[in-house]
Image 1 (cartoon, rainbow, N blue to C red):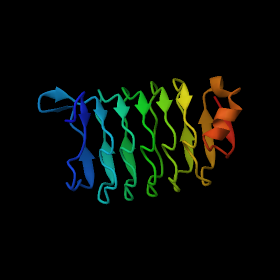
Image 2: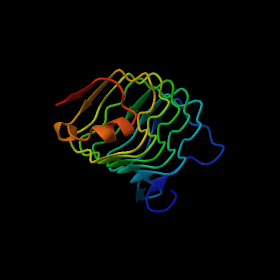
Image 3: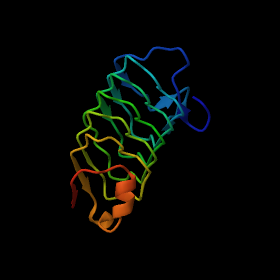
Length: 163
């Protein structure tokens, strides 16, 4: 546990194919996954993140080439810079209501991510957050209807629906 509730995989440790992040570690609640928490893990396919986690740190799951499924908690508020960058096996992800910020390049180069639905709670969408040309559908909150430049800056170039 790397200070202030941030959990990180020990450098050089191998992650299992299915990883369930604990709610507590060493008697402390896990409130965030830290910088580089599972970066470049070539083994993990599924990750289940428990309630109580509020933040995914920068580069948290960067280049996890086999990552297919991530279960995010309803308590999640921030997904850090490049958190899911370079994850070619990621095909879908359900973003929870309550999520407030997706930082820059978060889902860049997730080449098999075909569609995304952003929650009504989202206030910030970083530059190049979805920068990859294969996104085919995006559903955004109605409140984003007049934020076309931010949507374009986020790399969303596919048809956009507002709900």
